[in-house]
Length: 149
Image (cartoon, rainbow, N blue to C red):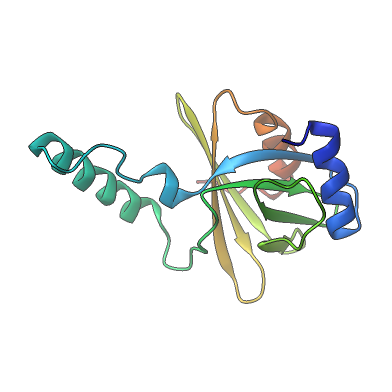
């Protein structure tokens, strides 16, 4: 697995610009996947509840991202890379910061970042665990683009 220095280098080699910050995030689909067994009544109820929450949280224009991914912020754009990112590769998606908007939703255990932008306009949802490295740096770097949630 790449270290923080290796990850920054891999991002720089992939997109040609040095990242201001990066972090490992979880996709919306992965966050609300049914981890419990559906064989029991409790498992079926839990799965139904998670599916309902996923439908509520997902926008109509939401892009599908990998289960776990690297979100890297550069001075010009935000890039999403599939994990592991140990060697240079093309990003799964990218959004230029010019014209983009961000919504940050902070919860007790999770921080959800919704980035909207691109051509055509799409929304990209990233979940960061409270303990995730890079969570605070990314929210701080995207703060100038924040809109009221």
